[in-house]
Length: 360
Image (cartoon, rainbow, N blue to C red; front, side, top):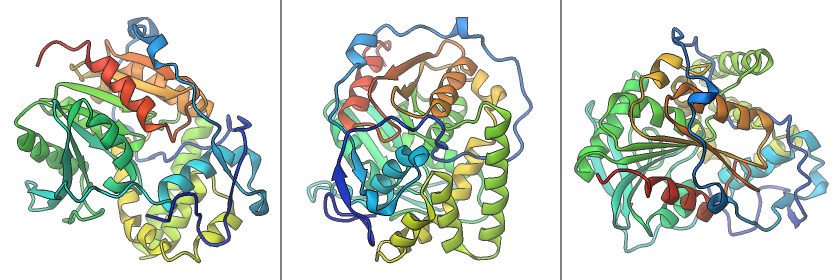
C-alpha cells in the first residue's frame, strides 16, 4: 500500500522526533491462536549458540519518524503505530522496471508471482501479515547485493492468486515451487509471522538455512489470552464477510488507536488492506498459537533468530523462546532496531550469518 514518501493517510501527519522507547507493553505485530501442536521437550537456553558476530550487528540508526501528536496516539502503542503505518500505508520502493515479474504454479494450481533480483546464493524472502512483496522491496534490494533473491507475493496477495480451502501446507508447497525455480536448497528469511511459515517450511523442505526476524509468539498467559481473543474475533468477522472489520481488528491488534484507524479509512489505499484481510487468517494459522515445539525441534538446518533491541519486550521474548526451541540455533539482537527494522541492518545480519555456513 502506498503513498508518496513521508505522506500519511487521511488526517495523519508526520513530524521528526526521537523515539521515546515507550513501547515495552505494545502488542506484537500479529499473533495466532489456534490450538498449539503437541509439545515436545524444547532445547534449553544453554543449547542456543551464542552469537559470534555481535559487534558487526550493532548499528547506529537515525531517530524514527513519529506520527503527529494531533492524532493523540496511546504512548504505549507508539511503536506499533509507527511500524504499522509504515508497513501498510506508505509507498514501498517501486519495483524497478528492469526486473520483470515472474510466476510459478504451485501444486494446487495457485499462481505465485515473484521478483527475482541479484546474484549469489539463492534466498527466498517470506513476508509477514497483510503485506505483499512491495512492502519488503527495500530489504530485497539490500539482500540482492549478495544473494539471488526471490521476493514473492504469498497466495492471496499482490499479483498471486489463491485457491481454497486454505491450509498451511499449501503455503509450504508454494515455497517448494519457488525452491524449484532457484534450482534447489535456498536460505529462507521470514519476517514477523512470515518467520513462522518459513520455519515450518524449513522443517519439511530441503532448505539450506533459516533466518527468522521477530516471530511474534506470546510467552505468557496474558499474551496467549489476547491472541486467542484476536483469533476468535478475526474468524467471526471473516466468516461474516466483514473484511473491512477484519482489517480494522488487525490494526487494533498491532496497536493503532481508533482515531488513527478512522483517519486511515478515508484513504484510497484502505481497500487494499481490506482486500488482503482473508490472508490474516493464513498468518494466524502459520503461527499456530504458542511455539510449536514439535515442529521447531525437528528443524535440522542452521538457524538464526533475530530481535530488535528497541522492540517491545514481548517480541524480544518471543524471538528468544523461538531460538530456544530450535536446537543449535543462534539468537542475536540488532541494537537500536524496532520491529520495522532498517533494511540495510537486517540484510547485514543475514550476510554475517550465512557467511559462516558450509559451502552449499
